[in-house]
Length: 219
Image (cartoon, rainbow, N blue to C red):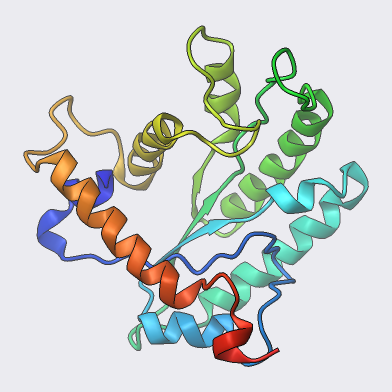
């Protein structure tokens, strides 16, 4: 919503190609599902926001080097493509958010082990971005600092943001993309833009990310 509001005249479109559980090298889909590379061509991707690292972080410190190598290989391969038919996409590498400690009221981990791992994987993503001169947006550090402030929880379960949490992340992502905007960010009606974004998201996900893709794509 924030990016759409601020770049309203650019007529940009977003397509979420992620599934829960995706990693750099493993993206389970139904047998007949269109491969990720073909979807990027179908969408004519100019910019790709890359959200990896959270699922891989459960492999712990021992596998962070392997993750970094996989990210490096994926980045170099992707930069050699022209999904829009004109040139290489702009890649924006985004770190996972920190794990929020809700253990006082929920039967959840306190986040110490999770954040120890997430810090390593976020740093690995930053190094890949630096080597390849890519935009890197660190969500780990600002969210970890945010958890220290009083107020309502940022997440619903330690790692999935609330609606308010997503609004905070949106500003960090937008600022990371093209720099901090002035206090008066946009003249667009944020509520109307958000409603349109949510409707488009619903339509896209009910086509791309069906509850049971076997019915449309096969096993």
